[in-house]
Image: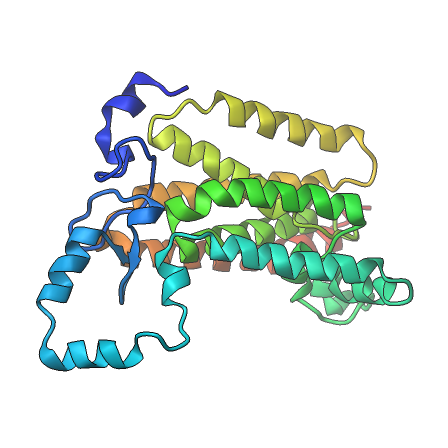
Length: 300
């Protein structure tokens, strides 16, 4: 179900397929296009009409170059089909790592290399060596098969909707920055806690879907209830880092807010700057604030 505002706003639907919702604009004519109508261009995607016009205006040299390269192995088929390639890549990489973690003799060592603990960020306390990359590598590790399966199911379901709407680069940025946000929240609230899992990134995707749905006028009650239930469960089941869930959701909502407010082509520079600033701010907070709180005895 959708609200009347959503149904009345035709900018929320593909101009060639009025029944298909999308969040991606043609970079030439700025009309909304669904995954089927998206063709990868040098910058962003364009609609079939703009692609036809571009092909019509190509020089003889450009046409010869196209004929020369057509048929050779390339990624153009995948990039122009609207297939959620980033979602599938994340599923593949994370699943391979998760399955390797189950292998006896290898799993414990791999988990030890990838898991996150905020104390790996602060060598001045002399507890662990300085290994800041764990703030992101932990997103690709899991604490067991069920943990892995649930997160990958959620990623598959959310990615099918969000990646075609946002585009691949934006979706990947949302996923990774949300995962980083989960690690930052753990560092702020519970330094010394070991964490693994994509839950922070998944909660970021759910929060983003909520913000984007609200922005385009969709009925977001269902996703709001799911987000709330999953968040509350973290307080009642042992072994779940609710801090990562909270951080991922907050950062995912912030990233989605930035994306919805910098949607036009002439705002692309601002979009990149704001997303980069968000990531830099998260890193700065993670490195500066917890050591001060630890030194002050806040966590004692």
